[in-house]
Amino acid sequence: MSTSLTAISEDYFTPFEHAERYVLPEKFTFPFNYKPHPLSLLAVSMLQVHLETQQEWAHNFGLSDDPENIIGKMFGVLVVETEQRKIGYLAAFSGKLARGNHHARFVPPIFDGVAEGGFLNAGMTELSRINEAIRVLEFDRREAFETKVRNLKAIRKGHSLSLQNAIFDQYSFLNQAGTRKSLRDIFAEASYKNPPAGAGECAAPKLLQHAFLNKMKPLAMAEFWWGMSPKSAFWKHGQFYPACQEKCAPILDHMLAGIAMQANPEHSGTI
Image (tube, rainbow, N blue to C red):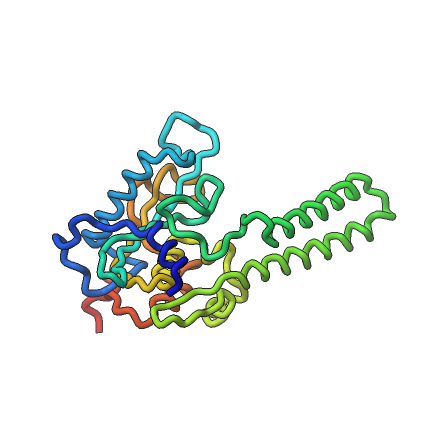
């Protein structure tokens, strides 16, 4: 392990003061149906205190009187054991938080799409330029411009597809054995034509990736919703939720390979 990786890890690892008071889980949490382990509950309570008291960034979760730009957020905690046998937790958020990817106490993204000078910003700028050219030509509506509009739309489609594939290629995921697999390979093996949008940006893959990069042993995990729910969803503030099936199941199937895991409670007692 490089010195830089170790230093980075220390910025995100939060140790428990009295971990010896708890019995460590024998098996890792089944991420799609679980009751949080007491250490996960401790980690969540510590993280929620941080969310309520930090002054480093501003994000409207809908918990105040401000009705503008309310965006609730899914957070996750991963209880880990370090190489030095310290017990603590890592924290992550799904997607972006306060319009950014990097905040104190939260592990970094697997791919930072909004990094300054990155190809994604340049690609989105080009898409905006094409869209504006199409808008101008469609507003004119002269027959001579119809061919140009069709050509521009074809260019836009190709550029958008190339940009999406370039984004997919930035994502690769580790497991406990150190095996790395690309996002496209993971979803191809799961019989998806393409990975769904946002795959790899959820909390659980971020947490496991950082743990494996820094030789930490995952012990337990939990995810909870913080803030108001969007109209299209049913999430409730402070409640626990399983990892999502569509975006996370194929990724976690690879990342958790070889890790002893609790049985799905729905299947317990079955043959």
